[in-house]
Amino acid sequence: MFLLLETICLVLVVRYNQRQNAIYTYTANEVSGFLQKVGSDAYEYLELKERNDSLAKVNAHLLNVLANKKMVVSATRDIDTAYTSSLLPQYTFIEAKVIKNSINRFHNYLVLNKGRRDGIVPHSGVVTGQGVAGIVRNVSNSTSAVMSILHQQTRISARIKGKGFFGSLMWKGSDARIFNLKDIPKHAPVVRGDTIETSGYSGIFPESIMLGVVNKVWMEPGSNYYNIEVQSSTDMSNISYVYVVNNIFRTEAEQLEQAVLKEDE
Image 1 (tube, rainbow, N blue to C red):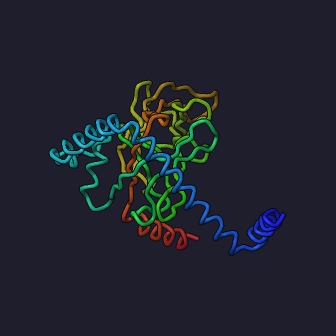
Image 2: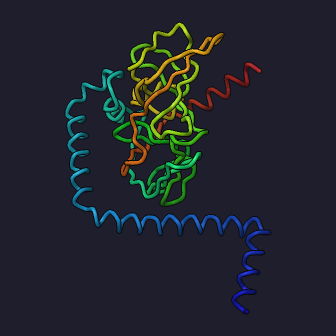
Image 3: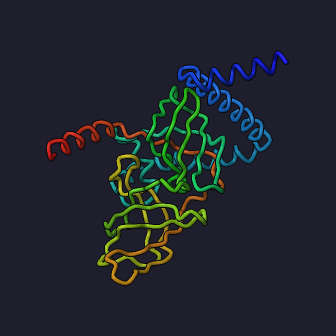
């Protein structure tokens, strides 16, 4: 009876006091992140050999990229270009491990094993060796919550590779590999098989990161814009390690944009 009454009192204190509720939420997130990390580490240990082989391949790939710095000059090749852009001062990349992932909801999230103390901040992009994975939403000291590309509020500024026309890429909400590309005008020379990549206009992702391939193109009667179905290059059901992208100049660019908008009011 005593424990029951104590529990009821604790619930009431947390629910009706803003400060205590904030402390409880923060502590719960920290504990949840810690338990998820412990569970993930135990699972990873059981598959240690496979993980080591995977990491060795990634390291070999990155060493090859660093050995060919001339790729930085060309910003329209593939995802390797985006990673080598970290040699430039605008972007930095922080390696992180996925400790939780969902793909079967309308609003899916990932949890990473790194957070504020590792240099991760909200609104940073998250990419993999396959392409874009999501955008950081919330950060604690040791973990990060990432809004997946499989989230109906995620919008990625995308363009047709080699043709320049850009629009917004968003998830359709059914198949985990099928997306829609919006706002491409009807005079754009888009065809099935075209590569879709990041435009770099949002300031979240560098340009030229692979997003997918055009699977289907059609137009509704009377419309001035295409309906474009894109097959994503990223398999969100099979990701373990990601790179968190930090645009060093993003805040400065946003402040400048806001100043211009205020002058136009």
